[in-house]
Image (cartoon, rainbow, N blue to C red):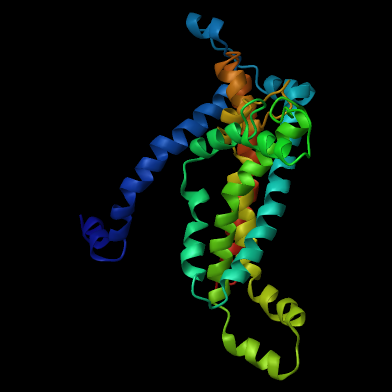
Length: 299
């Protein structure tokens, strides 16, 4: 009884307030993850699921994935998609952040308008870009034919190379505002006195950018890139709406391939194994992000 009173008397009372959130995460996040891991070690399909037969085959699903050409393609596509999107949207977002960090009248209103692509639901954006890249009624083909660049319609979403490029363009459109707003926030934390001192010492804009802006934004840049990697690597809805992994599995990502195996081919265990591969990559990147953000905070 004394231990209970002592618990309620001191700062441990805060644990009680955190307990509902912990319980929620345990039920709605922890349980599905553990169940998915167990499922990946079994051989569960539509046939034996109906019969109630579940056999543990341990690492056989993962061994089959290593030999699965579509899985290898999906893994490569996910990395390619993530790297290309990160590089393009970071460069453009950085440039826009530096530009709108300057003091002029319409800077804030225009910067607010540029946030719209990030605020629109991804499914809506995917439908918009699917219409833009459509073969017969697409806006892009209409414009290119009008100005004489192409003579016949380009099948953007039905050719492997152009389909991936279309997906990257759509995701970059979504990701630019995210990069811009975070980098803009980082720019506001840099003391203006540093730039004034550099100007007095005769430093030009390029030297100021390299010697002051980039070093002072290091933690912000790391956060933007790591968070961008996490958000982009797990992409699903954008790809599913625009291409559904086609044509001929050429735009499958790990997430869409996991969905296809689980809910189209009804190979639930193999689909969960693909999802776990995605989870492992995100856990590694997430742990790196936590270590990066907490570095220097320990006393």
